[in-house]
Length: 87
Image 1 (cartoon, helix red, strand yellow):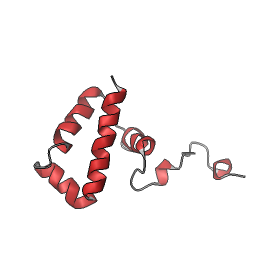
Image 2 (image 1 turned 180 degrees about the vertical axis):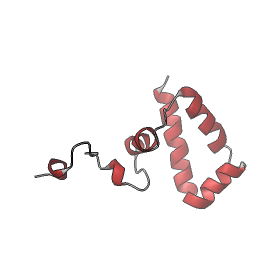
Image 3 (image 1 turned 180 degrees about the horizontal axis):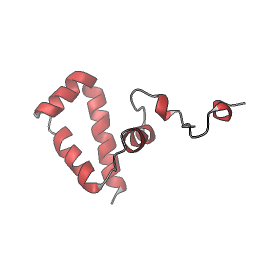
């Protein structure tokens, strides 16, 4: 039997709920939309891209210090992918 066969009703069969940090685009969307309860609207995505795409902004610098440059680049790429999905 798989892990999914033993999951309680309403549990996340993808395993995304157990991740501390998203590991791929689907996991990232799950984190934003399900865990955080945010809607990935065009306005929200564009606003986050405006901030995160500017490495000189304090919020972006703090993100990079906290999570590292590689993860910051990955998150920006996921926001860009979300923007592309809306076209």
